[in-house]
Image: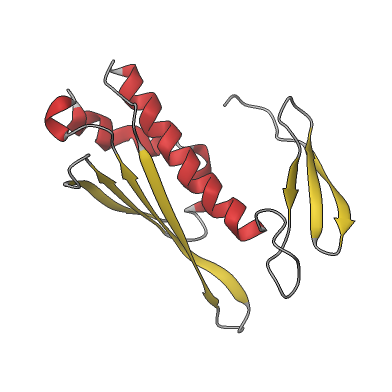
Length: 154
């Protein structure tokens, strides 16, 4: 990602269903709220937020692995956005938990400690979102050994 801006417009299709049209080569995206408000015709704003955080962290880890010429294939990421009520009793995303599982065991990756020590600092989305809500991050190897646990927050 380079400096600049992300430009899009939302075009209402019906009720809470919108088409997100991007000012780039990105294909249009249908968004919608789940029932009872919408019909779940596409991801909700909360789902998009959690997706953006998880995807950006994964991309940053892939970039760091590739920078050190280490294998980055076979990764899997799972993310959970905790939705709950704030002090004003309004629904909010309270935290995001992301678990990234590498496609290899720790001993198959050189400079792993250095890679894990810096990759999250380069994630544009999670570093921005973490100023508002905590992001719990875990990185596992392909044998489910915990390699890193951290909380990103302001």
